[in-house]
Length: 159
Image (cartoon, rainbow, N blue to C red; front, side, top):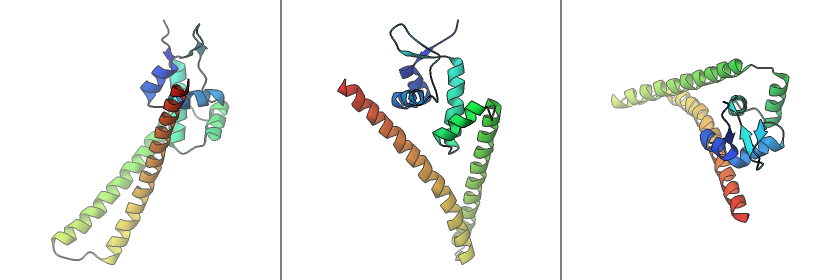
């Protein structure tokens, strides 16, 4: 027997907000497979797989319009999207490893009472800048989620 999740349950499972899921439905990006007798949205396993693709593509920085186009044209398979995510994580790990190595080099020189060279600091700053930019993007996404939660809370209290 097929399992179904209501929009609130799906929101809790995925960390997305009910408001976000409703918006995705409203724009035709992510619609439920069915509705209950009382009109509640019901999502199945195939819907969850599609949602994974949407969230993955959004995480890669694509706009909702771009995501909609990709999914409509079936440009990428779910396997392709997972492969893209893997490559992105590898790049992030590599960048963090580079930052760690730069910091360790500077710390080693400082521990030996040798002042690090200007080039070492420039290299460290460049590496930190890349890491910092990623952090800023993550914070922005976190704030967007919080604002969505606040909007859900306010909408629920209005009714």
